Amino acid sequence: MVPAERAPGPAGRAEKSRDYAVSMNEAPRSAPSLTTRAIAVIVLLVAGWILLHLLIGIAVAIASVVVVIVAIIAAVWAARVLL
Image 1 (spheres, rainbow, N blue to C red):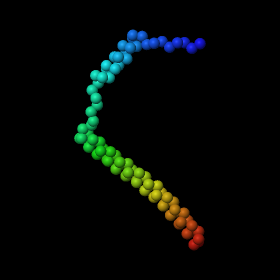
Image 2: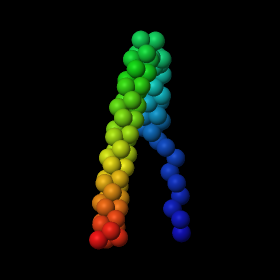
Image 3: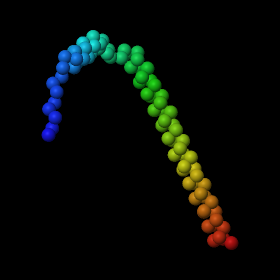
Image 4: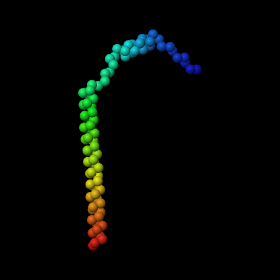
């Protein structure tokens, strides 16, 4: 047998109405000011610029290592062919 659901009592209704009243009394959030938005855009651009340079630096480092390894292999191959 499934127990019957209880209807909310007076305490349940009072709690819901109190929550509703609190949410109605809250001030609506205003949109950020133009200055705040401008600062956010500047911060985003600076962070993007730093991350872009970081990624370029990592790519250059990896490419440099690959070029050095290829140069060593080429030098060993050339020495074996000539000697």
